[in-house]
Amino acid sequence: MSDTTHLSLPYLEAAQAQKHVTVNEALRRLDALVHLSVLDRTLTTPPVTPDEGDRYIVGTDASGAWEDEGGHIAQWSDGAWMFLVPRAGWRAFDESDGSFRVFTGAGWVAEPAGSGAVSAHGAAISFHVLEGDHTITAGATNDTVFEIPERAIVLGVTGRVLTTITGATSWKAGVAADDGRYGTGLGVASGSTLLGPSEPVAYWSPTALRLTATGGDFTGGTVRLAIHYVLLTGPGA
Image (cartoon, rainbow, N blue to C red; front, side):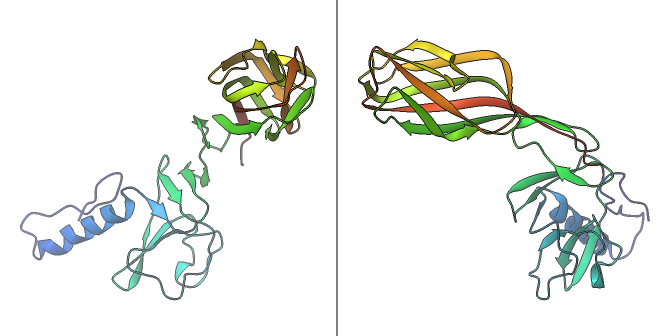
């Protein structure tokens, strides 16, 4: 009996007896693989009391019923483990940590958290936006609690004044090394916006955004800021 090329679904043979057996096997495989979501990808021993339909990516050097099945997809079906061999490009959601994984042909690697691309060996570029609200405190400058991530390449910062900034007549957005990098002469009224693209700047350590008052010190207000950045990931093997 021959199988389909990519999912190894069994074909019905001409004049085959008990056709329902073959059809049901194909449906079982489709049910396991379509919208693939696994409970875990690191276990090396099968759970003692799995529920019908539970799926896992088998961990490296697995033992017991999972021996020699490392990297394969295991589904508990009809009282037994069914194993499916992934192919390059397959994608799975890992429910244990909320990440997506992509099979490269050699192993499962993390899919970029934002939109982007990943190589066959896990090298990736990904695009992200980190957003946070900052309540302004009294003073000439304020640094945000949320930070530009380590090794991020920042393309710009955007924002909106949520509640009117008081004390200053305008403000600047940047970082300690350049307090106006992402905008100067910014409005203080509620609804005022910041659109601050810049030349790409790499930050080698976590870095807070700095808000600097002009025309007087800050006394209050709230702003929402978004950091637009790129992350690079090296090959995993």
